[in-house]
Length: 97
Image (cartoon, rainbow, N blue to C red; front, side, top):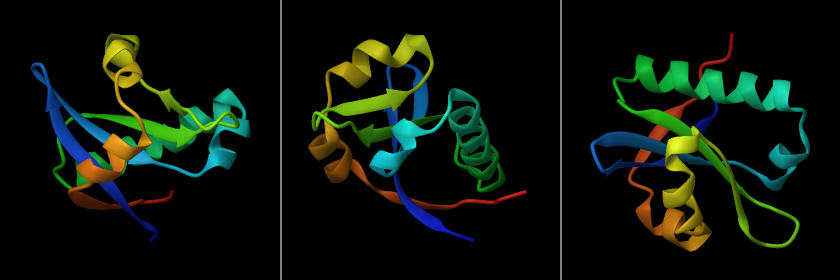
């Protein structure tokens, strides 16, 4: 089971689990991205890690891209990969099915 460092934080009244993934993630189809995000969400729930799972990666321009609910877009646009790296505070094992 692959293990990832994640940032578990609270934004407003919502728990958020930010998972940094590799650059290649951005080149995957939206269907594949959704499948991976759902797998992380299941894994977070199984690990009793509350919150919505957000996937972030560095795009080809060196900026942070993300896959998240629209309600988190403004927050995610206000942070970068350096912020995410300093906020890593938990590990999450990805359960693959």
